[in-house]
Structure formats: structure tokens, C-alpha cells
Length: 164
Image (cartoon, rainbow, N blue to C red):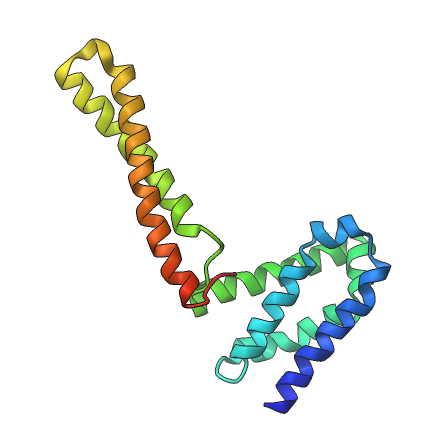
């Protein structure tokens, strides 16, 4: 366990050492803070997950040469971005992590579609001339209801600390 803690602290110190050498816009654009947070999560799961353990080598390489990856050629930037997306994908599908407000936005989109269809159907049955009013009321009401259900589910995920 001590080795794992020293691994993440070394990755963190490498990234903070290189922080002054990187333009602030590049630092934010390439989501280096997110990369660091994901490295911590990979470190937590590396004892039980073989893929997380194998990712540690790639993360260390990126952390050691972060300025080269972000300020270098487009090939190096693509490699950094592919490593970040590979970590995100693995954490999402293998360990059940979700982006912030994932269910709120997903449920809202589905609520809009369902609300538009239901609003049009009900308004067409009642009064075909008022279909525009029906889809607007149906769409908005279903979005609001679906968003509330999504927020409840997001609270559960946040309480379990499964937010990326």
C-alpha cells in the first residue's frame, strides 16, 4: 500500500513540477486536473483491477513528460488525449463512474422527446388546432419531471463517490 501511495504522490509531484512550464490555457484545455483525479482513482483500483494496474505505467510516462505531450507535436497531444479517454472509458464501464449530472441531462433529453410526442398526441386528440400549445406544455412538463428523477439518481451516485 505504501508503494501505491508513493506512486500517486510521485505522479502528482511530476504534474505540479511541470505546471509552470505549461500555458494556463493548455493546462485547462487538456484537462490536466481531470487527468490527475483519474490517476488517483486508477491508483485506488490498481490492487484489484489488472487493467488499472497496467495503466499506471502509461500514466507515469505521461506525468513525467507532460510538457512534451501538451506542447509538443500533434501526435503527442493525440497520445495524451487517447490516454485520458482510455482512462475515462475504463472507469466508466468497468468501475461504474459517471460524469457530473449524467442522469439529470440524460433523463431531461428523454423527457423532452417523450413530452413532445405525448403533448402532440394528447393535443391532437383534444383539439387539432392547438398542437403547438400541446407540444410546448408536454415537452416542458416532462423535462421538469425527468430532470427531478435524474437529480435523485445523481445524488445517489455522488453519495457513493462515483463522480468523475
